[in-house]
Length: 205
Image 1 (cartoon, one colour):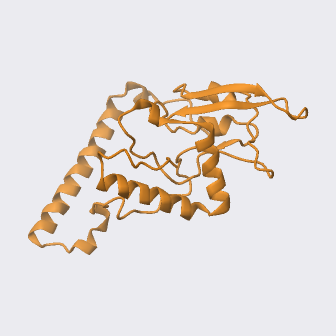
Image 2 (cartoon, one colour):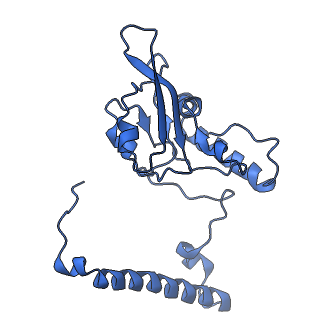
């Protein structure tokens, strides 16, 4: 992707751009409100306005696009070991500073170091994908196709450790992305049925 760095004079004034954004937002509001009124009085059939329908997630869902940046995972090599070399490029590129890495020496003399601890604070993460682009060994990806879940009211529950990130890669390799998403939906449905019951929470995906 080639990003345009120079802005025109009108864009630098911002006023026109703000008005354009306001028109788009207000136009969507009016369009959806008129559609709702037409559906209410019976002037429009519901199947003619599927684009305005509410998706009852997690009982219903729409497929995500292939480029969707979902939850992170740490990739594994052929032997099942973590690919990460603790180079800190992902943590350096992260604008939210949500990645913590604690390197350690590896038992294999051919491997310089590996992450003894690798944690992502999802309360801080903005899911920009910079960590994926910065990694020189393809050790971290965001192609899981699932989004963050609802956790107990404890900030520590939002920190994803190395084992959790590696587990997603194993599930994708063994069962495929459909199984990972299905387990994610089952967990979300259980949370929806018992939103305040955290005693039977399964491990996060």
